[in-house]
Figure 1 (cartoon, rainbow, N blue to C red):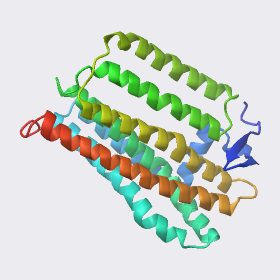
Figure 2 (tube, rainbow, N blue to C red; figure 1 turned 120 degrees about the vertical axis):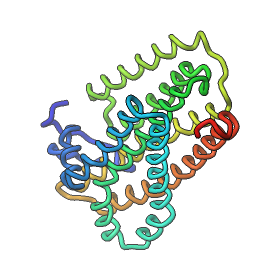
Figure 3 (cartoon, one colour; figure 1 turned 90 degrees about the vertical axis):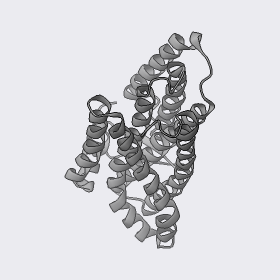
Figure 4 (tube, rainbow, N blue to C red; figure 1 turned 180 degrees about the vertical axis):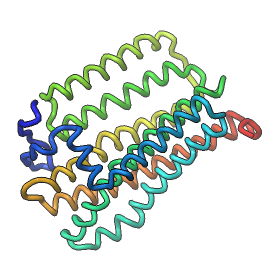
Length: 276
């Protein structure tokens, strides 16, 4: 599909022609960044990623733990706040006012939440691997996690944007399917059970990954494309925004389960003095 070609996407049962100006990934990211404030968009992505890169390579284990916990706290807090306070407040507004609100909020959350989510997940995995002997048989479980997280996410992205016939989606899906399949093939012969708390944590994080990157983030892109279309559908913008706010609450609930697993790891698996 060329940059000048039109495409049609799923819009909660509707099909709406997409504007050619926002069709490319680069165009969409640039447009969202302009609306969010370029400095904000760069900062909320660069700072957490740089902090994790430093903590995981040069910094000590305590700094690594701090980065993982802090990004997780922010991610969970924002999701819970949006569902518990923001969603009900905005839900009481008229459709036009809800759409206006999400026009301002969406460009910022489109950068902030994926950044926090990605760094939290990557930070947790790298921290568990860094602590020798903590995560037994890690590679086979990470191979399962990779396949369960990435393949459904890409399928949902392709469905929401009607992109199954787009060579770019096909290329990404092929790389992910082959890569995760090869990872599984290389590790499954050595399959063995790990601590149950890690199985639960990986399962919940896989759900969070699919929900966040396969549903919520595409929803934000759909809102942006609707905002920049020739005839924006205010009701659709408001509906997707409210759906994302409610799903943020679902994410928040799952994240609290992950917090519970982290407490179990800290007190039962590691012991009281392990991280002091």
